Image (cartoon, rainbow, N blue to C red):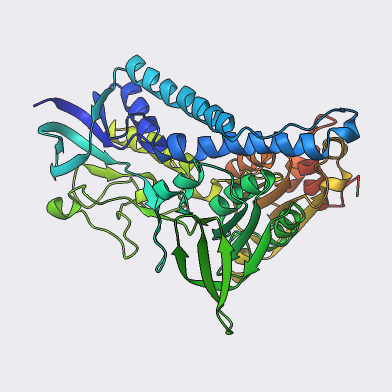
Length: 465
């Protein structure tokens, strides 16, 4: 038997980051991963390939709609779908190959196959059992099933997010079930490629749980981009043939059943922890009512020496949340102090415009009885955003404590929102006030000036509004 200090099950963002940090801290580390490449769902069939397609189709949209305004004349580019998918695959390959290089650099063993925990300190991969002082479960998540809907990615008609990244051709009509992050990102990709996209959502707003101002503006912007929405609709089932599908839904407020025709149906109704086959029952690891692995404040399960991080435990299913937990649990195992501030984990939707949030929403704070103050600045007042055709409808909103001016949350919808949100994250991490941001010089002309103006709006008011 091989003896390790740590065996990590899963090589996604949580697992591989945890492995590298463990190795840096002098722990003999191995990672169990059954895929042919490292990086998990995120790098292989999630975050990275979807961002490649979002970038490619945004470039297409720019050429079709904005180049002429900028004096760039000539025939608009056509879509070579095969080449676009090859570009996506090349991006994925560069990233997964980079992780494999980092494993070799840090002397991390890759145990190829599925891992089963036989007992505390023992992990079986294939026919071999490995001994370890600590086990970290970082097995991630899989798409949630929807009653009455059978996903068959290989047929390319009813697909989940993985299948949507590799369709054989661009569909004429696509129905997206679910108006969350995944559905809106991939829906916008195909809308730009020329598909007629209809999004069916059970709730009454897109991106449930997000700031209400963002929800309203975001939906209007996406509608202008060609996406159609049917809100408050409960999907009853999907009937698929070899080439088409019918989506049956009923208004949750009551009414007759309706039917939508589609060439492709994308089921984007969320994800669930992937814990099957890990042997958790055998070793007695407790789960929550929602099927997540129960952990304490140090990411430890009820079984000594077994930890869990990422999508398999409570909290948002975000790659960067898993990465933070991966580094923190490595610190704990090494006898140090691991830290994750769950109040400052940003969320981003990578459409155009991007949407980014962090901290509490205005509605949630008011429900708690907190007195808050908000500052809002529209990108229509930002010179840089105007120059790149991304000023319409977007804004920065900062939420502060009404008495102390301390920043409690923020929402941005606009260009580079996913990058700009980190100014707010740092401010919140250090307990800064809106005035601290407002008094900080921001370069001109930049998108980030909108953040400063929103901070000024929490006080006497912005300059350019």
